[in-house]
Image 1 (cartoon, rainbow, N blue to C red):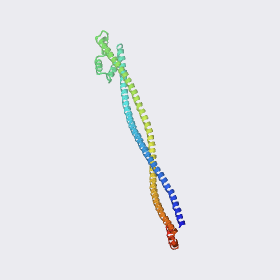
Image 2: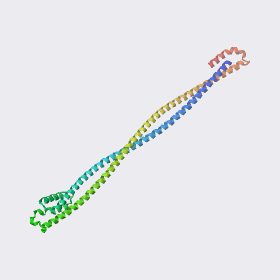
Image 3: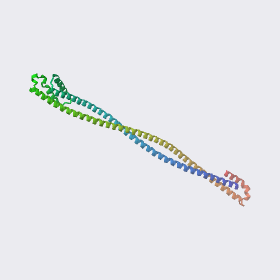
Length: 326
């Protein structure tokens, strides 16, 4: 019985030592997994913040790209409409310039012929004067009053129609014709000055308009080029933000999965440790009770009162003790 008691005490102590190591392992594993789960939770929170930041950057880049594309579209339309207006202005300028140039040429010819006719009046020259004045009356730029005056001048009898004896400088009709032609020359020279001034102003306005158009066209071209360059950079940044967001989402998904596995492992481990702890406590209690019973038997058998009955009771007690310690 003493050997059985000693063996039972040793086995109970050995089991307690082993379970102490197991308890330490449970505690270490619990601490480690709790830390890993918390670290995963912190990482998930960080991933959420990074994903939200990337989404905000993507929205910002997209908004700016849309704004720039809208500006580029508007500037391109402005370029087209401005070019169309400029082309029309240039065409109008060429037409008007041609009118003034033709008018000035016609006025020059008429003035030269009228001045020449004042000194030399052959029939051919008079015919040229008549034709040149008719051409002046057909010019669109000549005022209606001037056209009427020229028409009246052309309707009077020409010097070539007067008899030779009426060509004397003392002849009133000849003097009247010369007076009328002088007035026409003065009127034509005034028109020439006016047309020359207007032609100069027209050319100056065209130069200014062309310069203004070139400046505007260049500004629009620069705006479009700069905007398209910025769009290209923003698209690159947006693509990088999308790639970064996708990476963060992938890492987050992996971390969420790992965290779930750790939580399941911790739950199962805690359940196992709790179960083994209950089993250990139960076995320790049973071993204690068995050892207590053996010790009582030893005490009884060692007393004087039952020493003579040892042979009678010892076999059955040994059998019971063996079964209890088994």
